[in-house]
Length: 152
Image 1: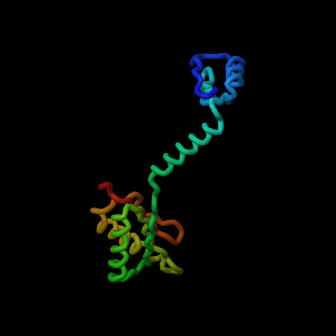
Image 2: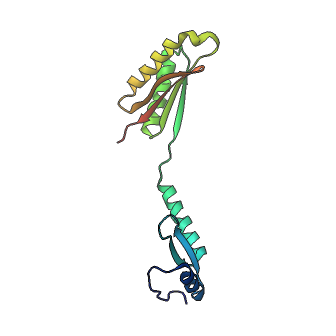
């Protein structure tokens, strides 16, 4: 019965159901929002399998966004800054987004200008590898900045 040619066309619901029963297949609603609703006569399990397979293929092609974090203090030393900058360069070259933040402990919040200067300096040093997605923004005790890699 399967593989038998059935005339394609517009059928009433009763005729479509009768035809699907005759072929011993299922009547599957493909797009319910269309007028009239679109249905197909096919094996439902096979339809689900193919749909799952198609969804999996689309999901594997989708790019996954990786976010790497780098943490600074408001008074980060020059050597520490250079060390962390090298890591940031590596992350951006690998195609990951970078979340750089300055964490203010206790009363160090009075040095928020230093934290902002530090993040802007990092953005300037990395401008050939990435572009600033979000400028430094103070959220509680953290000043955060996002840098996304430039397309090759």
